[in-house]
Length: 254
Length: 283
Image (cartoon, rainbow over all chains, first blue to last red; front, side, top):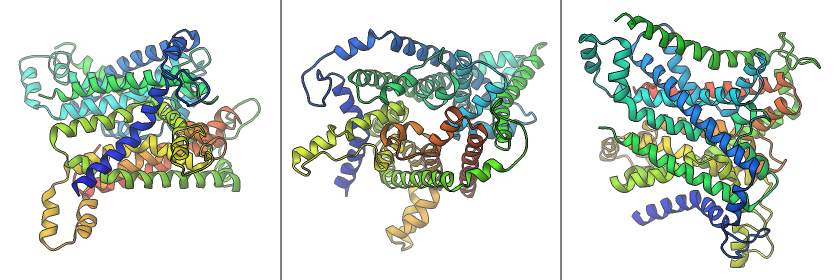
């Protein structure tokens, strides 16, 4: 029975990792046109870094992810604190909506924001994509930070209030230091969400501002290419590092 | 203390207006658009008619809708059957190892799903790994045509979405108090009966949220069907995208999107009901 369990778990992990592993290995394969192994090369990585359009798209992706993650961390933390500390009209509605937004299929979010931007006649590009990614990320930050806020002793905040701290001071010197690991975890989460997003970017950016997943999408549709393998290998590495770091922050509970 | 009220007010007003502008208004606009019509000058000509929903029920459109639901249902069922035992094994693994294994599930969870879909093409290609392995083993004489089939789309969706099923199931199974299971066994229930009457009801919120996280993207992830299915398997997501970007029939696309939202609403109700039954209401 125990052996069976180990075997089963191993099989699932193989299923999850084999395709990724194969892709990483083939990103070093010297053969261009076939899957046959023709020896080790770094050519595809060199080619990748000399592709100006691709590098621009990668830079755009990192830029949007960093800005969106920062904005949504601030916004998401403030919303989480408001929901947890204060009673105000529509509090319950906002709380439920955040949960619903987190569950919403990307295509529904992408379409609804596209319609909003069209209604406001905003040209699609950096700003619309930024707003769309912030909208995507805020619920994840809020829910993460909110969960951590629930775990704290409310007396700490009460003590600060009794000692004369205003709401801003309570936030800056009591709440924020307490939830900071969750905020950082939220930042990394948002960063990966933004870098990984295909569908929302597809609808909410224009030709003036191309991001990496869309660039990959157009390359992938043209078939297998070793450069794409190399690019994907790098993206897997970035994700793995981001996940690892954010897990570290969440683990620092005590 | 002078700025006290100001900070609080600013945060609350900010939160409410942000939600209003980016969550409520866009969805209301899509909802309204689904009742409007389209003209050559405007994507959306305001008005009220159920015409778009009627058009969605045409034979061709209905066929796309139903086949997309069927496909995603199949993907969800496969993910549930594969992930449940796996999550149970994970939940019973000892502490230090469990953390590592969990991390190994989380990494693909966060890896770009387009990258993962693309990785699948290298497996299924006529010169890909699976075909090479089968040829080498002498199971087949000529490469199988696995790409651009509905089966490839199902496999691709299972591959990209499996972690989204594993994680909520794991969370539910890890919280499960094993004493209930022991009690059921002591009272004479067979393992099978104890599983269906005790474990399944207690992990129902995890099952429902896992199914939701697989089923809904399974309808919407148009690039999986583009990359792996060619033009053969059309998801509702492909249909919605085409209405907005190719055919420019926004009202029809909006109606399809509203349909998807209603489906999500139904699944959320199911989730809250199952969570409330266990006495832990979330959100």
